[in-house]
Length: 118
Image (tube, rainbow, N blue to C red; front, side, top):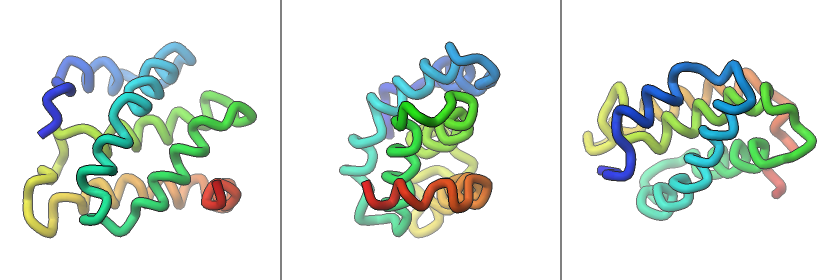
């Protein structure tokens, strides 16, 4: 379990990304924790390339912050140890993460295609 995250962090971020300041706080937390989690569990999941594409989108300076805010929310959910289905549950632990990531991929659609090449 990721001990660097606590419910205070999640509640602060989950309060909304309606401001650029909240988006920046969320993206900093993604930067701090995403690659560590992918190194730890990357071989257990099939959607690692999707996570990388979303991260590339999130860090693209040409994309408006409010477009990236949904990506930050999804990546925060992915790196958070507090899930609908705990990540420790064998076989099923990442299904909720996959669902959130898939919903964001579907929402952004073809807008994400160029980020798979980064």
